[in-house]
Length: 509
Image 1 (spheres, rainbow, N blue to C red):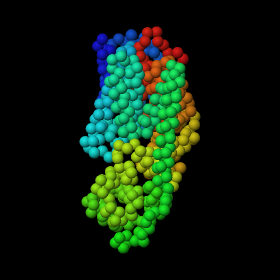
Image 2: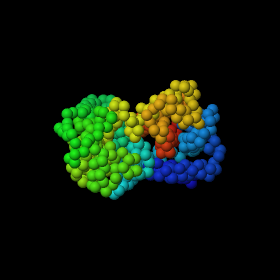
Image 3: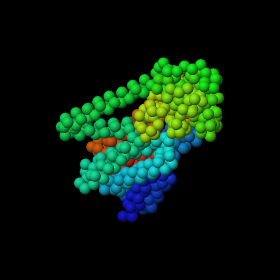
Image 4: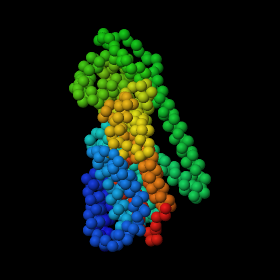
């Protein structure tokens, strides 16, 4: 039927738009609304709506709580925008509750379009990386945040694994896509994505090993986990050791040109065991860096990016003095690495995932030394969580409300005197904590109860369980529902499973 075709096209467009186009993502929601308006079967839609009312209520709970939160708080621009961003959480289940368009075949089609869109986005990102000489792998995500893209990649892998075991003729294609996506995820260096996929894989292997009574699977998993853990611990110990200051092989009184050295007031910073903040002559560094690169260390863009600090860290990693002699000793390749933001000569390979581990440990080491956390994404999350928790402590029952969460969070940052610049006064980067601060215990309990109801009725759907686990893990590390891509992904995938048409299927509460 034409109506069902229009609905199906809308959901396919949404699945394609999520990783590829914000415009297409927004437009597809309007397409779905338009298809609903053009569907004149009002009596049938009303009957289906009555039959699916509990599904609709459970699925749209987050939107309902957000709307109620706006009613008992100030009607701020942030509150209105937040409600608008979460509109798909209401629109998609409202439409699906009035149609039986999501058959098992249509569900498979939409999920495959989602995978195809992510594979296409992956190819475009790889082309962009090599063609445009992108220096930071996490910046290769062209269309959406690399964190959201990593979650889409994870779920695409899960989808392909699910259909790999169901397919008779296309196993090799699914396997190729799975391998390509996993390699790309590692290349993307998204810690969130890698952790989520690892957890999903472990749960999957344990589930099938127990179900099939195969002890071999558990043993293999245990061995792989042990080996990877040993390798990771050794790598972490090696990197941490490089932050410990050791006796330097040099201690000159002055530069080769007879000038004195400057020592920065902060102590304890080291690269490969060499102290970063000693044996510095800024005058010579600036002069000879400009001679080597034609670019001033003191230019506005370089000061903003902190290139001068990248330079002294790189020189320290090679046990070179931070002066003319040090700059002249650098190769052209090393000069380019410094310009690209690489602070240690051991991690010049931009595809090397070890560099990301090094970066995370360096951030934590700086945090322990009491240095500025600004610009260090992982350490800043500690302060994000502290500020949001402070908001919750003062608004435990019903939270601040949707309209006041922004201003109350800023007040919390001010009262805590955090060492973050105001532009970094962000939300918790933990969706559950954000729910607590915004809607209080009552709001969070409503959301959790809704998810319990949904999960009870989809507990035997393996793809849904994988999706639910993925969403929970992302909620622990990100404000997933603060972005268009996150909301669209949540609303589409959840409701595809919840409203999959199966005769005699009803929601039990």
